[in-house]
Image 1 (cartoon, helix red, strand yellow):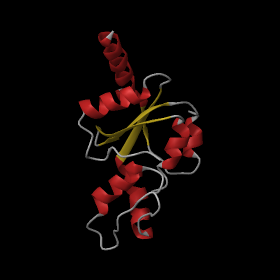
Image 2 (cartoon, rainbow, N blue to C red):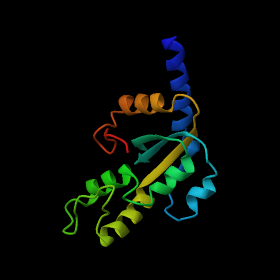
Image 3 (cartoon, helix red, strand yellow):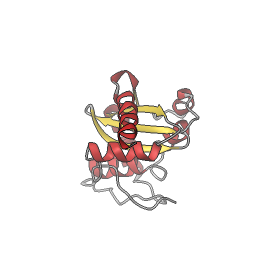
Image 4 (tube, rainbow, N blue to C red):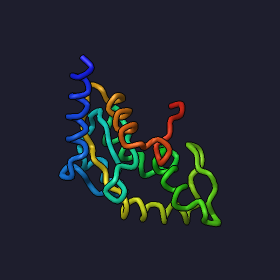
Length: 150
């Protein structure tokens, strides 16, 4: 049975990592709706063609909308901290506090310039696929972190 599960996860991973499945990230308010993916799934962000963050969600379009707001997406907070922590205006963001407006503006530009995303509808095994990819590509600690969800 374990072999069947690994084959299933590998098949999903292959689809998710396909270059033809990658999209440039847009922080335009209409971009998430244009994806037309109001379904559960798994997503991977790529930086310099390397996976840098994996997540799973009950609604891919809504989750892509969350990347527009520092309070709503941990990737945005981690990415911003990684790139702007030496900025004089930097202070630690959270689900309650955004970055300084100057950093928010620069962060928007950097996300659109530097990141691509691949989205895959997945009904069964989203969490298992997320954990498989996170482990295989050693993503824990870069931008992925494991904490308690609200």
